[in-house]
Length: 108
Image (cartoon, rainbow, N blue to C red):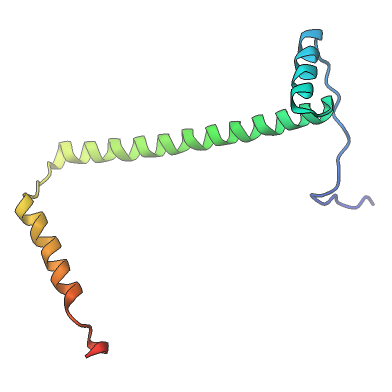
């Protein structure tokens, strides 16, 4: 029975056919990076997969934020909203400052 592979074990290589144009582009990039062509292709593939995952994560975040914003806009449309005056906002901060300045019971 074959043993399961650990994450650190290498898997068999993948063979990919390239056009001459693609091979030349990879050769040029390998020279630019000072790497071998296989290492360059592997590095570029890993970089691109990471970029794709990050793009997908940003797209999910954008969809979630858009859904939340649309839900809020719908709620505001249906229920309206109350606006606080500057005086009311100042009063909240003034109360917080007073509470912060009072000595706590533990320090009395």
